[in-house]
Length: 295
Figure (cartoon, rainbow, N blue to C red):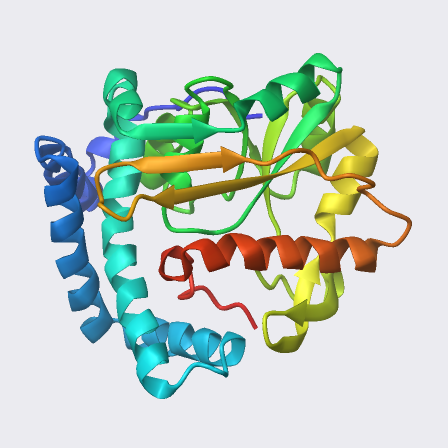
């Protein structure tokens, strides 16, 4: 488990100067009020939509497949809104990594924290069943205000970005576990503790079942929630985070533990999980990461 960020003198090398310049710019934006950040992010998102051709195509195709009943104008509107929300997410990450706890608390609303507290008090670990929504980084930081947990993450290939990522995420987590380290996840759950879990990406045929996701009848879906819940003797709690419609704050909601989960069939568990994912996305479709390759 990663429990501290390791700074290295190599980060002063000129090859990292552009990253440091970007960090300096983002730190300056911390002086802006949140609505101003979001307005700037919206513009960045629109610009990115004109430049990121392959990502635009991916997001557009995901939306077309999932929402075939939308007409073309509605799909195009959702696509545009999604890139605007993606631009805003740049500031969500910066705020999650660098805002003080006091400032976080001025911009947050938490619902359902008693479900986490009751589950841990009963001696069971908590699997927060989340989706790859754009404000997820801020959701973790808000959650950490009352219950720091264990973050599951993908280590960054760039050493400086890895340092920044770990340092930022440890402000809301006790530690970070690489996403393929199942043994450490199970150990944390049996502690008992809280870990994050997302099941809404395509990891290929070898580790997936093919089940419905929105209008797609055979979407590759991983079944890790069942495995983690069984091995970790843990409860699964749906986790939702949204950027508020007025762009002045964030709301997280933790729902009660799923009953009879895991069940006797991992495919049925995965179908149930996809229905939960659909309900979470449907609360704010534009704030989902449609630009990730899903199918």
